[in-house]
Amino acid sequence: MSIRKILCIGAGHVGGPTMAVIADMCPEINVVVVDINPDRLTQWNSGTLPVYEPGLDEVVSRCLGRNLFFEPARPEVIADADMVFVSVNTPTKEYGEGAGMAADLQYWEKSARFIKPHLKDGAIIVEKSTVPVRTAEAISRILHDNRQGRRFPVLSNPEFLAEGAAIRDLMEPDRVLIGCEETEAGRAAAEALAAVYRHWVPPERIVLSSVWSSELAKLTANAFLAQRISSINAISALCDATYADVTEISRAIGTDHRIGSHFLEAGVGFGGSCFRKDILNLSYICQQQGLPEVAAYWKSVVEMNDHQITRFTRNIIAHQFDTVAGKKLAVFGFAFKPGTNDTRDSPAIYVCKKLLEERAHLAITDPRALENAAESLRGLGGEIAIEPDPYRAAEGAHAIVLLTHWQEFRELDYQRIYERMERPASFFDGRNWIDAKLLYELGFNVYRVGRAPLVHY
Ligand code: NAD
Ligand code: UGA
Image 1 (spheres, rainbow, N blue to C red):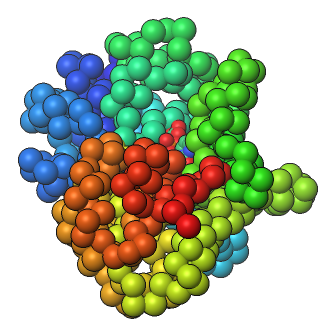
Image 2 (image 1 turned 180 degrees about the vertical axis):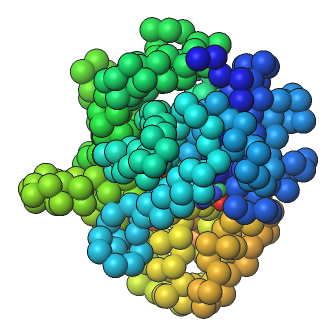
């Protein structure tokens, strides 16, 4: 089956960029992206996209109105689609059974029920969201219509892009994973989806598996990545106690090709919308399957991350003579990582919350994420200033707390910043990002993660 019309449900961080790249690479395919949030659709159609990703503006501007459309869902659009991607959010459940652990599948299920009456025969459903293993089975059952004998193949095609590098990851993926049922219809559907990707992805990078393996591979990939971060952060705590240097350790172990050098950067902890939720979900699934030891093993990755954030924040307070009450602290960076305006589950939220509880006055600056930062902190009491200019944020501050390693923060004039700060002026580098020696020579006391502090007393 040759795919000519694609519909995507969910115009978020994954749906929007993924569909834009498909439209760009496959000019003969018409791609429509729908969303229940009309503001999101308006933003995609305006010059100011809802998602900041390097290179995304260019891709969207090439295709928008040509073969890429963001619009409200209409029955005709669903009925027209040869292939429907479902890329809705699957957050951690906040209520009922499994609250705080399980994935909330209500958006997925509502999407399935919404498209079901309008789908044309043979339409292929593609599970793009990250879901618990065996979700496709549930979706198949919802879509399967006994009365009319209609069946729709459901594929799993998890997304592995990382924010801030979404366009690069989509254009040059390490792999595209397609999980299909071992039936003729399943294999044909997988081939139709593979043909879409073959427009730009080398065939050897398109990997086929069973649907269940594909679903679980996605959770496993995130769990392994996050586990590496928690492992190196655990070692950073030991480094702080012994004055070994965690960056030297990362370099030393990373040269072992069996370990590899990526995801060994110690810091304030991982954030983002997925690591925490996917690992908790994985742990919950293990629990449900009667595997409490396995569940505890994976949950400890999140617990170590929480510990790292707490440890970092306590360190700030300890080096501010055990009180930050009434002190101005400049927070450099609020996005969960550089290259994005996304602040979902950013360590900055936890650090700021704790500092506000200790009655610090915060001035928060970030090159891209200030709007989302304000949103993430909404409702918290205390004194918070959102400040686009880092120089103004640091003016009169007792300390700078760096939480996101934006390149911009390396390029500031720290002499100028130092002159306008209170004394002693401290720099807490939650990402081991700043030239600590230079700052120390300017007069700062510099505290890092898993590396000896540089202090003047
Ligand atoms: P998001 O919140 O940015 O976007 C989801 C969108 O779906 C929202 O705009 C929401 O309004 C819309 N939506 C929800 N229910 C809908 C419905 N019934 N009909 C139409 N639209 C609906 O989420 P995201 O970051 O794009 O993540 C989507 C999925 O992809 C999640 O399962 C996530 O785990 C996974 N994922 C995310 C990333 C990432 O980097 N953010 C990477 C890989 C995988
Ligand atoms: C992650 C995965 O890398 C993607 O493959 C996956 O598709 C995605 O989750 C998802 O499922 O949502 P993302 O969260 O966008 O991508 O970004 P990462 O680059 O993985 O960074 C996550 C967090 O880990 C950030 O807070 C980052 O600062 C932190 N990190 C990363 C470290 O603390 N140390 C490192 O060495 C690497």
